[in-house]
Length: 209
Image (tube, rainbow, N blue to C red; front, side, top):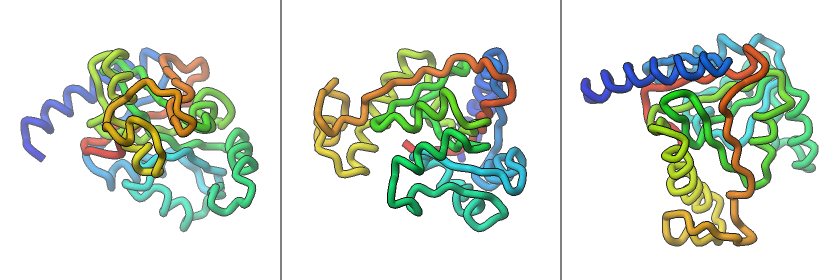
């Protein structure tokens, strides 16, 4: 990585962490995917029950693989014939893994969801939530974060899932009401009432969408 970009990210990450801490959330900054994996595993005791939403970043750092192969009770939706049962099991899990569609410089996270299982679990249910967030997700403010979520993350995810939405065809949000829309619920996480519940691992890399 270019040294100037790294220096900028180092400084910006500290600003984000300070913002998270002011919002009763814990923040960490790591230089690589490997360090992100080690940081995440250090937060999850052995034998914990762990599940997740559609967090590509957790896959990218190797966390999902490590949990499946380690001494953890990983609740994998792919193992359930009844997907709703898997989603409901998430609310009673020790840990829920997620990423953010965007995060502001002062620690506010934006997430958009179609089925809403991910945003509902972030808001309430699992004992703890661990976010894996690449520095590519950091935006100036909530307005910028919302624009990123709708015009970057949502179109890419719609294309990834093979959905027939206007954004999948145009690459940007059309504020649609398509039956396939994944922009059903918007969650703004600006404060955690429960200290030590939400942990955000910022990674000096480009992760997810």
